[in-house]
Each structure stands twice: as structure tokens, then as C-alpha cells.
Image (cartoon, rainbow, N blue to C red; front, top):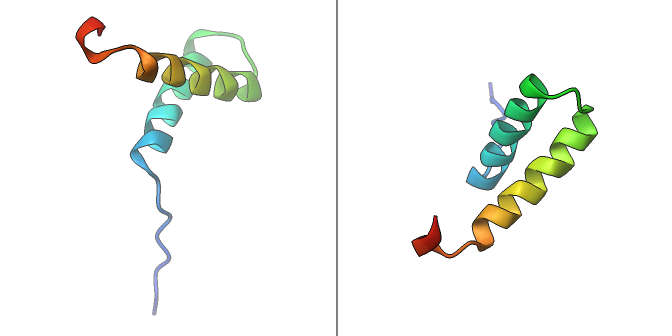
Length: 52
């Protein structure tokens, strides 16, 4: 008996977290929330650590 475990990277988990927050607090579609989550994380990741 084998159990298949789906791998989720830390980045994927962060995108899902942001996407879920956007879905709960806006009227955006799932696709729009996903795209905005990716864009937000990219922007936050490019901000220098000292400024965060």
C-alpha cells in the first residue's frame, strides 16, 4: 500500500496563503486572486530585506 504525497514548495504555500486572503476579502475571481498573489509575492521578494 503506497500513499502519494503531493509536494508543495514554500513558495506555493505562500501564494496559496495570499490568494486565500484575497479571495476572502475581495470580490475578485479565483484566477485574478491567483495572478495578484503571484505579483504581490514577487514585489515583496524584490524589496531589500532592510526595507521590509
